[in-house]
Image (cartoon, rainbow, N blue to C red; front, side, top):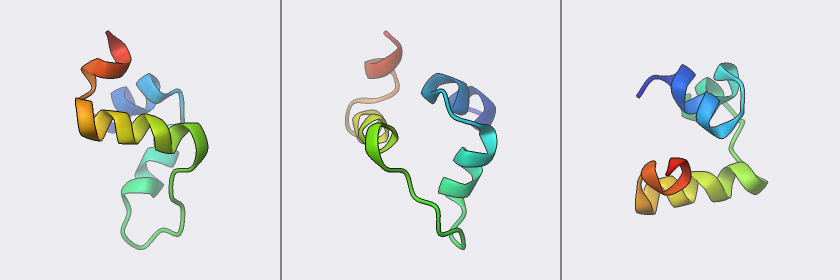
Length: 50
């Protein structure tokens, strides 16, 4: 899935997703975004879009 689609599903900007994925960036997901990412990681994207 593209960063654009993933950002849209999470309701964040594409640049935010890019910063999360960048190993040199200091930005890490927190709060609700971190919880959603944990759900996606453990249960798959279907858990939040179904």
